[in-house]
Length: 467
Image 1: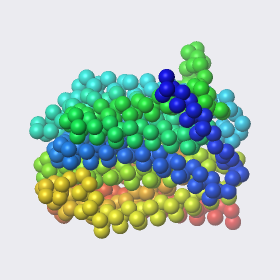
Image 2 (image 1 turned 120 degrees about the horizontal axis):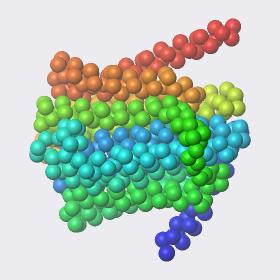
Image 3 (image 1 turned 120 degrees about the vertical axis):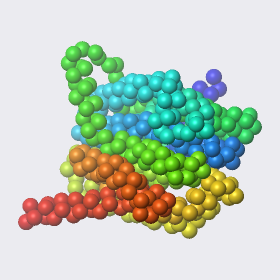
Image 4 (image 1 turned 90 degrees about the vertical axis):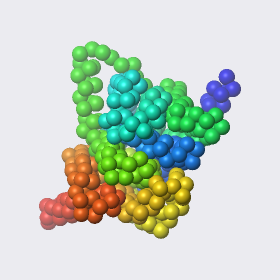
């Protein structure tokens, strides 16, 4: 009862911010959305970081490697949530810019219902057949017990995480970015506390970290549910209709959201694919210690990805809203600011990865372990990818905002599968183990070059059309 009263009071104080996507100064508007979005996403990334840090020091490098093998399933489910979230965000932003509030709310309801349904379908086989999933993701016999434990107890978190991610998009458009941030931050803080207790004080190991994640994600999911049903101002949950016409319209709307948001899904599955392929090849070349070393990069890549995601998500509603109004000037201002922020963050992240690699690796793995030495030998190469990743995400997010889903999807697919898998397979043939660390940087760099060529070509074509 006390928790309910406190939560209601907390929501009333956080749920409303004054945001005008069409008139507020762009730099102020971007900052007002970016700061809480970044903090919210980073707090979500802390869940994975906390698990890695606690397991690496509390259990050992094998536990760290095991969670890295299990993590792709979490990235796949997060990708689904981001796909529906970014897709519905674009559609709803355009509806709101035109005053179509009912249509916006119906789209929100459809996105929530379908994504919940899909997440339940995914959760059940992961819970029932964890050994099969672990084998698909490259687990060795030695790591199998750890991976199975983690998959079983983390699977309930998928639905809660989906509600948090999707809710973040919807609640921001409803005018409450601070609450969207809180729905990410509160579960993250709780996860750190609970995971620390379970791993270090109750000696629950990998299982304890997974249970902590499930508990914390469901608390965040409940916050989103309570907000949408009782505290939303513009975007409301509508009662679904199941007539033939309603189902046909729902399928049409969901299909359009998927087309707009598919590049976000591919982006997340790109990391999952990178982890799976990397785990298999690191296991083949360097055994469990190699996978543990690679896991450091895999824990930090989502952190950098969250920076890029925050930049793209913050500019997305502004650009989409003004795209609906036909205000090109505000769209260009937003794009320029987001690109500058991406470059700045990318340079800082890359420099930290190169010049402070030992300190970064020691956060996860004790300095005397073999896995630490393996990570130290290659992490500075891997860090080169950070700047290109951030810029690529920003450019792809810009294309998404303009409903250019074909090029956005194509470029995401390039960095996800077309470049990274061959890079993992070919570079080690010429560069040895260093080639494994360079696969992601090469993939991101090639993608950046192709996006740049495309955008220069489009710009020149538009100039020629005007003349």
